Structure formats: structure tokens, C-alpha cells
Length: 496
Image 1 (cartoon, helix red, strand yellow):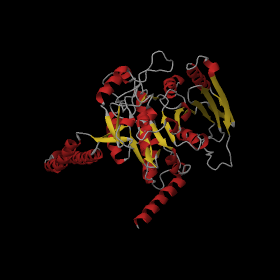
Image 2 (spheres, helix red, strand yellow; image 1 turned 60 degrees about the vertical axis):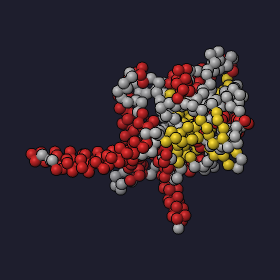
Image 3 (spheres, one colour; image 1 turned 30 degrees about the vertical axis):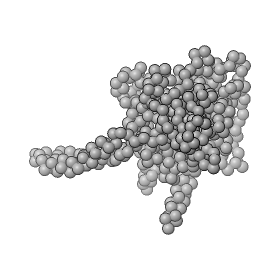
Image 4 (cartoon, helix red, strand yellow; image 1 turned 90 degrees about the horizontal axis):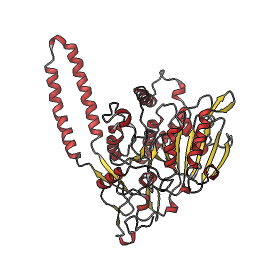
């Protein structure tokens, strides 16, 4: 799109800064109703609301974002200090006025209030400084970042037994991003394509349905239908000579089915041949990271099967991981990943406007990250995230043995000195998916979150004589510990 159509003329601006219209939420390219490639990614009313909320914003030269503190930070800090000052008087009052006939209950209540005070104080200190990060799009950076030089990116979408229909929107919107089609690859990592019987791998019914779904979805983008798709099949076999190949996650190798349509990015369908221990989602991700993806790809986006991205998702996620130096845009080699909040399009339809099961979870996905962003400690939630691949490999990949491999992996990246950032908020969501539609599935999901956090805690504490060796020493745990020790030794030598 020419610069005049974007409402900007870079040459007429000051060399130190420029103003642009296509800032986060300020302008989104409207769909062309006559094009088959257009989808209802954003509702027209939503675009207008965001455009109203966001005014034109200045970005300094060579800046990828600006940070604006919340206007309520001062009031919040005052109330926190006031509560800290008043708490001892409240606790003293409780202790002094215990009822003599129920001293045991009064004592338990008093201890509970102390615990409540400590946890509340920690929470308030965690939210001490909240900030809003405003992102500059790739095509609006100054100095300009030529489109043909934009980095190569792989988009990963994990699948196991979810209905293929859940992935249709995700696939359709992923192949229509405002990004050069030759510069990114959409990869579906399928753990349900094969069923292992002894040493034989048999294609499953859902595996065939997934393959058909990909073909049908892509055929809609060409007038030739299925005849316009170039489809190839190849095998990735375990190679003993390849020291980086991780045999434990794919002892039988992987089948790769590639779909190529003119004008669209390459779509890969990776079908893992698992061993007796599949290592769950971690195994699926590790297979893609070490065994499938090319070595020259520096950025990877991870989404859940139902999380459909906005068309400008890559343009808004990538800049926070870039830095202008030596007269060109390069990775900053500080930011390991950038997370974006989860948002769901079926909450009101399934649960109503009141959202009684708190599927939106605004505190965890919108409020808390704005504070963690100021520390560089934003969580990895398992989806809606872009990774700097060398950072992942620096921590030996995704963490094994934890149900919530996302939290544990993000924590290890932070321990090794890598930072993370938050892109999004209440007025900007780059992905929309589907929440759980009944109470049973919701409780099961949250039980897994709790189990994963407990496993992560046990992994860090490593209590003797309690944990099984398979949990204490999963693949590459010793390598991770050695890497952490090397970093500690380097820190000590630097301080000396």
C-alpha cells in the first residue's frame, strides 16, 4: 500500500520522529466484500471504536514502541501504602478482641487474616506500576524497514483430537496475514494423525479429516479449486548423525504434507510418529523446534487450534523484539518472547453477558501483564506468543515433565536473563478463540493449570525422596541445570 494511502509521508517528517495513522487500533484495513480472501476478522463497529480510542501517536526515530504509565498508578500506590499503614492496627484489634469462649476459632481466624494480608500485599506490590505499550507496525517503523527484508516467521498450531472444524478459521486467517507470503510458513503440528501399534504407525480417521480440511480450506482461495493446490509428501527420518535431532519425541520420524497455493504462504502439516512416551504437547513442540524447522528461522508464533489471528498480528508482535543498529533492523537479542492476551468470541453466546465462570479472566490476561511488562517478566500462556527461536534453544527448548510446559518454559527463559513483553489490552486483541462451553470442561482445564503450577514448584524445589526419577530427570533437565549454573558462574565473575 503506498504511503499516501496510509496517511503518511515519511520524507516530509522530521528525521528524529514521524507520525503515522496506522498505529495500534488507529486504522485497520477494511475487508473488500468482493474478495474471497477477506474474512470478518474484525467487526466494523470494533474497528471504529478502536479508531476513536486511539489517536495519532508519535514514535521517536528507531523506536518500536512507546510506554505510557496508567493514570491511576498514583492513586493505587497511595491506597496500597494506606492499607500497609492501617493493617497493624486492624490485626492488633482482632487479637485484642478475641472471644474467650472460642479462642481456638478466633486464633485460626487471626492467622487467616495475616495470610490474607500478606498475599494481598504481594499482589498489590506486583501491580505497583502498570503501563500501556503502544506498538509501531513494521510498515511504519522509522527508519523504514523494507518489506522484502522482514524476517522469516513460522506459525505453529498444535492439534491432537480437537474437531477439524475448530481449526478452519485459524487456518484461513493465518494464510491471509498482512505479511509477505514468501516470508512465513503456517505449520499445523498434528499429534493425532498416526496411531502406534507396536512398531507400525497407522493413519487415524481424524488424521484423514484434518488433511481433507486443509485441502478444502485452501481450495477456496483459488479458482482452480483442488487443482490449484500443489501437494507434496515427504518423510523426516531419525538421523543418528544429526546431533540436534531429538529422538525421544519422534523415534519413528515425521510425515510432512506441504500445501502450496499461488499467492499464499506455504502450509505444512506435520504428523509426528510418537514413541511409547509421547511427552504430550512438549514432545510435539520439541519435534517441530529441533527436528522440523529450518535453522535460519529466528521467529516462531505459537497459537492454539482455535485461536484465529488478526491480519496485522505479525506486524504488531514482531517490532517489540527488534532493534535498529548498524543501519538496519535486527533482533535485539534481549527479548525471548512477546505475549498477547487471549480473547474469546463465544462467551456471551454460551455463558451470557455475566460470564459466571470468568472465562474472560481479565485479571490474568489483561491487568496483570500490564504490570509484569514493566519488569520484563510477562508470562508465556501456551498460545498467542511470538518467540525468538535462539532464546528457546538457549534454555534447551521447552521444559519436559510439566503439564503446563508454558509456565515452566517462560520461567526458565527469565532465569537465564531473557525478558518478555506484552502486546495488547482491553482495546486490542490480536487473536480470538473459543472458550470452554460447559462446567466440566472448564473445571478440567483449571485443574490442569493447578497441577502444572504445582509440578513447576516441585521441579524448582526438587524435594529428596518425594519425586519419581522420571519427573526429576526428564530429557535435557541436566543440560538445563548446567546452563543455569554457567550463567550463575558468569554473573559471579562479572561482579568480581
